Length: 129
Image (cartoon, rainbow, N blue to C red):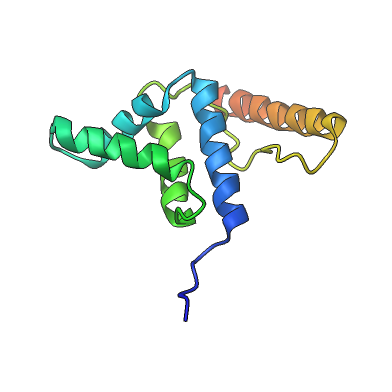
């Protein structure tokens, strides 16, 4: 009998796409973000362990068997990584999957960007902080 995985394959795929999109928005490579995540989680400076983690991270972003919980952990860490200040604040933003028209994709991206702008304005207003 097969053991049932937590989460679904489509959830894993969606989370992988969201992480890849955030990496692209930051202008980083997968190795760089893996290095930043590694150093956030580890106090050691072991080059071999870092390289192993970088390879595992890249595989986790491409394999359908990656546990969604692990991907969610990475997603929650990315906005707090050094140099990630310019990333979109909306964590549940739209990630295109090809299931809807390009016009609707454009509209959803615009909505996401507008929400992000409003959040930034709200957070930068001194009397609100």
